[in-house]
Image (tube, rainbow, N blue to C red; front, side, top):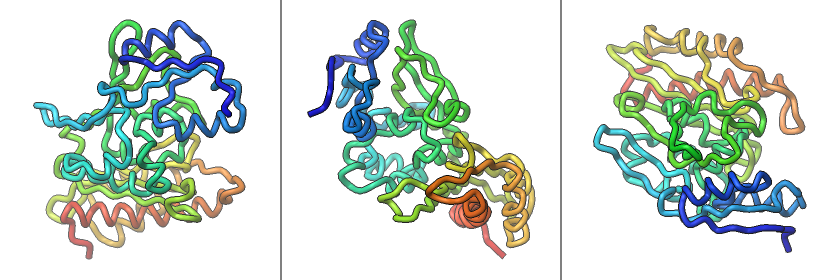
Length: 292
C-alpha cells in the first residue's frame, strides 16, 4: 500500500491549477512512472496527489495552422512514437522516445512528466532543446509560454511555480523545417537504463556546408545544454571529416560532466566527444549532406 494522505482527480487543467494553489503539499501525477517510485520509497513529499492522467486537454498531437506542432504534455511516449505528425515533422522526438525504458513504461510515461521531472538524463530533453521547443504553461492568472532551454534550473529542478501545469510543448516550423536531426543515447543497458550521456543534433546543409547547427546534451552538465562552441566549429564549414573532428574537440569547452557510480567524468568526456561527432554526422546525412 502507498502512504497517500490526500488524492484528488482533477476535472480540467483549471481545476488542477486551483487544487495545487489550495494545497502547498500537492504533487501532480500523470503517467505515474516517477511519482509511484517516490511513493514506493515512502517519500512523504508525495502524500498529497492531484491526478491529471487522461485529461483530454493534455493529450494529443496537432499541427496548428501556422505549422507549429503541438504535443500535449500528457501524451505518452508510445503515442509519440506512433504519431504520423511527429514522424513527419520532428522525427528526432520519436527516435528519442523509443530509447526510453520498455513498452510498459512508454505506454504510461508522458512527455510532460519526463520534462518536468527535471532530470538532465531525460531522453526527451535534448531532442526538444535542439528543436527549440516552447512550453505552454497554465497558471492561476492565465497562460504563459517559455523556451524549454533554461527551464531546467538544476538537478531535479525546473522553473515551474507550485500551482502551474505544463500543458503542451510547441515546435515552431522555423526550428524543424529543412533540418536533419538525430539522437543517440549511450547507456550501459540500452533502453532499460538511464542515459550515461544523451546527445541530439540538428542541422541544415546547403551546397555541402553546414548552414545551421544545433547540438544538445543530457548528463553533460547539471541541466540539458546546447553547445555553442561545438556548433560554431561547424557552422559555415564543409560537411566533412575535418569539420566533424573540430566539433569533437570544441565540445569539450561546452560541457561540465561529473563522476558518479554510473560513469567517471573522464569516461563521460570520451563519450561526449564521440557522440558530438557521430550524431552530427547522422543529422547531416538526414539533411542530405554528403560526407566526404
